[in-house]
Length: 385
Image (cartoon, rainbow, N blue to C red):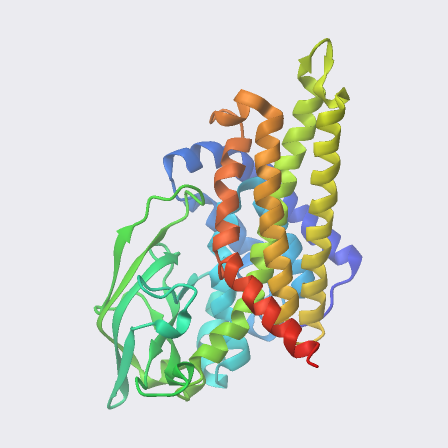
């Protein structure tokens, strides 16, 4: 993965920003309210190469660095955070295959993922296993040259409109520690043993499908076991989720920036007591704190991305970025609503949507409570006495 020059990054960002302005923003409010999937955005996203941002060029991807990856997610989320979800877990799957797949698996899947022919997802969370991934119950047993997967996954982004998934399943129920008994499989649709369950009606992150995935004696070839080695799936997925936390942090920065932009524009138009509310000290303090925290979140996110590109261990840095950026996003969205007053509480104003979207980043890719525990664990390792 090559570093990208500032000029190239700016060119890419301007292209994405123009796409958001022309094609995303005009539909965002209605599609979000009515929970409509933005099918017409898929083709232009394919043309821009957004399905292959970090996939190596040799497999048809753009081969961009994680800093550029973060900036793209930030720009998409400024327009409508749900659009970033189309390629979010898609890139988690791509990361798994790029870094852990066999040469044959890379050749089979990565070019189609990069082009958007395959649109991916991550089948990880279960009804009784969210932050506690080691508690998953989905199983996969070997039957000749195939594996038979059985179980139920919950909150799966792209479950309905995606057509290939990285599915984590337990291949050795007696393994200790438990994570050593987990393996990762690439499962394509259609498959007679895989069906989409309930479509989930969400508070925010609307217009993007989040659903159940039901595996009922779902058969996949042994060649679809990532790396073709059992017991490595937990490690593969956790490594890929480092990139996932960068994209969630970047989404949070994008939504927070959009909320701030809306608030500072409104504050200069809305008048009370004979002058714009932006001239009131109470509002100025809010705006100053909002802008400062957004910039801090952005720099934390870019720092984590740069360290990942440098090949460093970044679980601490991505955890910090995801934790801080998502909490800032929730705070800024609320402050933007307060600055708008009653108008911020109605669906005619975008800040109402930002407020509903913000909690996803606090909960998604590992809750912030879990992030704090992981951060503390790494700090205690680093500063061990």
